[in-house]
Image (tube, rainbow, N blue to C red; front, side, top):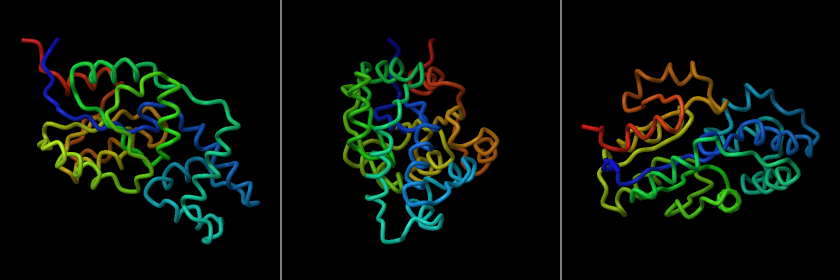
Length: 219
């Protein structure tokens, strides 16, 4: 086996491990309708859902008295009525490959932790992850905290995600990132357009391509 050049890998959840963009949107559609509010179009929702949570939902008409935690609870209630999404075809294999090589794999996500763990258990690869961190509004501080805890230099870590927000969070922590623009959360042109200001970001077509940035090249 080739020697790993990373000690820690941070994995985004929605849209990176799980092919769930429309699933999550459909869940939020249920939440909006519960308040008698017309849901925003998908293109508007996907552009705002992460950086402006829960402000975006309040601006769309959900009462400000409803907290982010309550919105999350309503979302999970709605998702329980929808057929669960599947992981991307390469997700389990690639994560297992990295974990079995001794790399510490950690999920960092804005999604509720309990839901992530339940899904990973259902898909039978929860054991690959040393930790799962959910309901994160801004990932950079979490990344820095784990670097310090493991006494890991930023270049020894890698973040794998699917949005510009993931790349920005990693870049702010001086961590390189591999971004796979296939989920639908951020369109490819938006990710491509961020190359100049996020030079630490590499765009990959699938998760197998991430392995080239995790292990030594064959001599």
